[in-house]
Length: 477
Image (cartoon, rainbow, N blue to C red):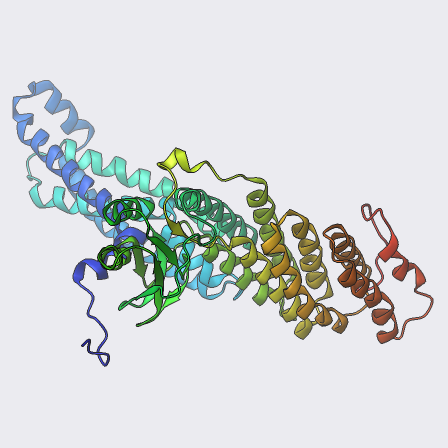
């Protein structure tokens, strides 16, 4: 029996996989490249005794070797100082960044290739300079030191670009845009899995076998190629239905899949190999997991909905969620044949439901800060999304809206909010939920009465206005 009192010890390979893939791989590769460059430069200087004498004299007069050797010491210490100051400035800047985006800024900074390349370049330059200093001869300093000076000049030029990039990466709009781009990449990366899996179970089995995990962490990926190899060994008649999705947090003993149909031997083979198709790690990656990108946008909007935060940040995050939903709804999944055909595997694609749930959460949390404009933006986004959803996702979204709509009554009767509710009423009418549309229509007089307003019939009339575009007069802000 397994020892439940002890957490499984991760191997060194597992412990180092995240740091290497997240940040260390590019800098370490560049440092090794500079070590190789130092070896080549040293060999060139060693063979320089065969150069024509006038060439060596010309280099010695133009670049006196005493000056070059002194410059090597200055460059080596200067590069280390620049790296230290850059890291210190980065940490100070992040600590003073708005709390709405600071965690995401740090996560994005580690994963950006430009940042990794910069630190790898500076560290590589310093390593190169120290190696050249170690083998430099007092009577001749040639290619190695000259190349060190050129590389150091390049590092100073890069410092200017990195100063701008670091500041730009901390802008909320840049953060939101970066998350949005990574979410699109992650969604495309999931196409092989989504295209080859079934949306619902097709095999009926009263006694399915549940496979549980002994690991803990996030489901960071489910590899379709491994599933294909596994199901080829298992044979026909067996269906593997995932109970988890990419991005879910697992603990010891959680169910991962249910195996239906087939013989006991087929089930044994499937149960023994299915967990190898699921990659579990302690950290999520928005470039692989679109749900994580949605969570990041939701967290930004949630924090920015505070009464002490700029509502523009929340509205930018809500706009990104609406954009992602619209793009994914308009995109048709590739045919399963493009990736090798259908698999007897069930996987629930709930990304649209995730976006709707996030927007509903923003509507609810906006009541604590009374940010009616954020609530209005979220409701208007839901109105745009509803008609694009598939029937099952739409019904789930409508049920969530029924529970969240009363939160809108806590806000002031602003024109933005009335327009958003009018859009929502029209969207509900269009998808066949006239009863809920009537409830939304009735919220107009309730908002006016609750605010103690009189002569606001024009605000109520907006619920029946078929043309919701164009500027509107603004009363409350």
